[in-house]
Length: 562
Image (tube, rainbow, N blue to C red; front, side):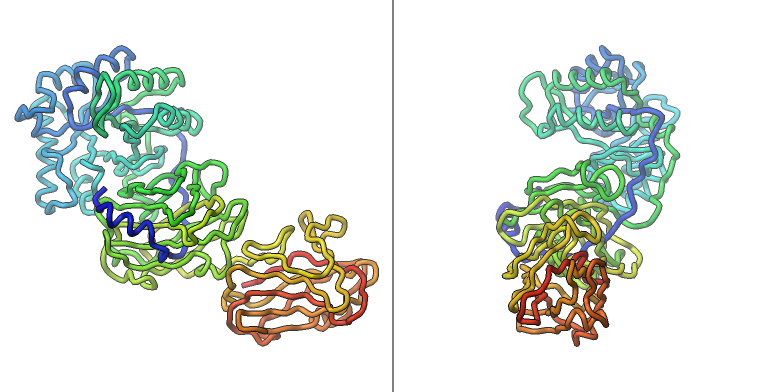
């Protein structure tokens, strides 16, 4: 994986990780007229001719062969011969370039990259009498902006190995493809093909070596499984196209709508590889912010999502990172997002700290963080971690639209934080000693439930936060009260921090009149009235101030407002 196990084990045990989140435009997703699939074969292995070619011919399916030209031209062991390539062409298959020597283009000089690209294309055209060779795929899936600029000079398309679907408005210089290797099951491939049919998208499958028995190398696949994949393609009535045929059906876009760099946007961003060791799903379809899919992850025991960029990104080209987070059914997850340059830790922050409150259940939250604030004013971004910061078990977390932003974006206004909306807010516990019901259904302001409470003899509603809330991110508290059948209740609202009292006010004084029976009234209290301009909120009381028995009071929609 490019990093020693010692380093990886150390990093997995780190509890010091973190960052902030923000939003991202949805991935291109304009559907085709029908679902499509392309079979691509990389390098030019002999088994592609001896094993895969007969199976493809039996199914009447044509493929795109991406060839390493020096291996074929010089007759190197492990490559098809010139006559075999001639046969493949005669049978109607497409030939694409995979460079001259299969070098990592991101490690070469610009002149060397030009040579690899132009030399490969020129030899294929002259040797096999091809009018054009428009399709290209990068060795190891390694490329950067400089490589793409060179690719654009010679080729009409570029296929990556970043998993995901392609659509009519996909960038054809960054076509997504699924690498089918020993870690991929037949059910995985069937799921991808089902998506192509359902979404009318274009799925590209990439293969390398084929064996009759059990695969022993990561790039090998059993030939029977390959035949089963082709069977399934035909059972789904998916249209099979070469890369150039698929490109011809797109809009031919060669630039992204914005110059930002997706880390995740319905699939891994270009150049990023998923090295995560947390249980996760990069194609979650039930809880989605934008587009077709999101990520779901079970973070616990210091495990992490771990996204590695093949060539690294120049941090000076970016201003911020943005993503969306959803706490699922539980909320309150303790999570850190961190940057590394290889094994070198750069900076991090806890997501709830950046948000100013716990991650909320059942809602998407947008967060933006300037890179300079985590020490990324310069240097290289190679690894991004989203890691458990508790050591314990946590509820499923959802993430979507993670993007590195090239231009500075004004931080968005914080969303309101719900202390109570049908249920107690994420991260808060009910420590009340008054008789009360947090799921009262007969008198409700909005939603399905409200709070009913008997505030008698100095008793109180008492809500305790597991994590403090940064009050500098909010300006006021809003709540709705209903005096029930009696009205006139006397109660005070109290904010406490870790060091004691932050501020307090009587509810009737905040209203400017007595609490009324039989109706809902809105109370809005600016923090300035409480004498609070900063600090961390840990506890909220709503407490009897009469010392006597009072009628039932109802409360609903208690929120901190930005």
